[in-house]
Image 1: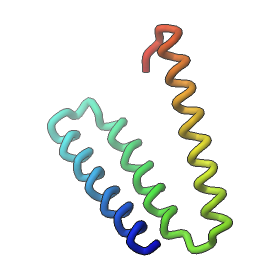
Image 2 (image 1 turned 180 degrees about the vertical axis):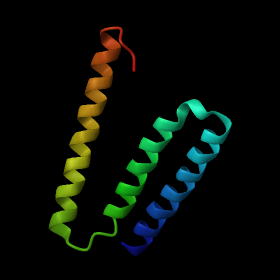
Image 3 (image 1 turned 135 degrees about the horizontal axis):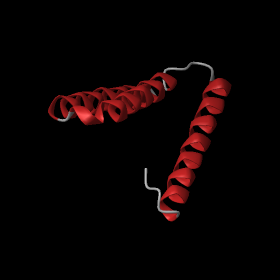
Image 4 (image 1 turned 45 degrees about the horizontal axis):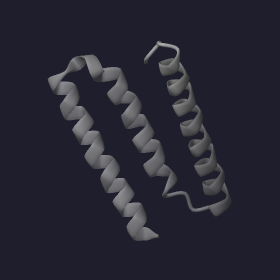
Amino acid sequence: MNLIRTLITLGAVFYTAVMLVQVTTNESILTQAAAGIILLVAVAALTWQRESLALKRYEMTLLWVSVLCFAVYALAGAFGRGL
């Protein structure tokens, strides 16, 4: 499990750096990059949770939030209001 935590953390650091580089080249994506960075930090921090029951709850909450966000995005696209 320690290797998985480390790889997820390194991935989050890498993609945070990518987002910061993109913001320097295109300032109009600042809010999207900030949201992405916050999400990456939250997910990486969850992997370091020691209590397995709390981790399971957080993972399920994030899963359902992701599903609901995808559903809202799909509905917005279906009704011609792309986000």
